[in-house]
Length: 71
Image (cartoon, rainbow, N blue to C red):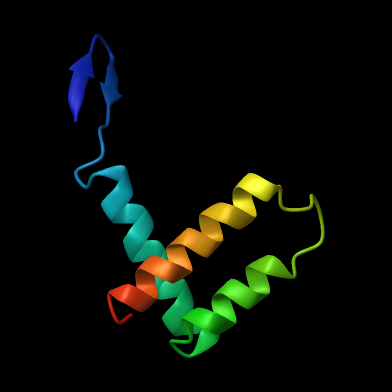
């Protein structure tokens, strides 16, 4: 932390992307028994805004890349 007058300003020690990845890994292990497919299915089934064509294309590209990389 840094001191700013009478206040303490705290800064993250872990980069945002690393913290995000760790949280998602924990969520998948805890609630989906390690199933990435189960986690993705749950996200896709959430009520609310429909996925745009851009969103769907991004997901397709991620699936293609995962297949190529054997994940």
